[in-house]
Image 1 (cartoon, rainbow, N blue to C red):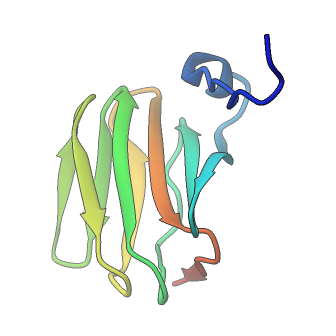
Image 2: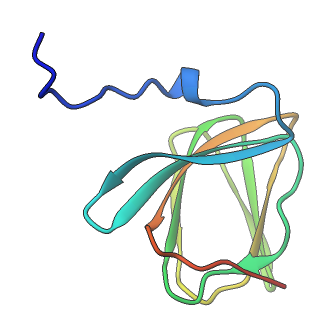
Image 3: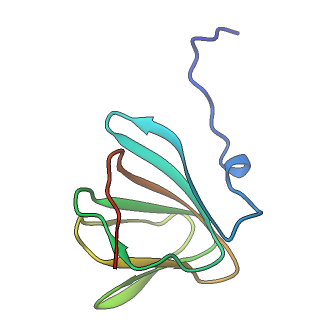
Length: 111
């Protein structure tokens, strides 16, 4: 096989079973990064002043809370949060695995 071929990413291997919260990059495209997040506990309230953030649920259910309410995503569902919108994510059940897509230089501001 040629070493010039792109790397295949296996999501199951990338989703950690040992951490309460693990979020790490698995791919880049142009000026954006794709991350995989494994959650067993809520993430803190925050916003991204310079980037939208898109979530794609792979496993489990993900609650995304906003100042005005909340939404629940199931496997195969995708949601984009516009830049500057305060939010918090948490698993609905014991664990959720999600892909996130955002600018590689995205800033996170804790609230």
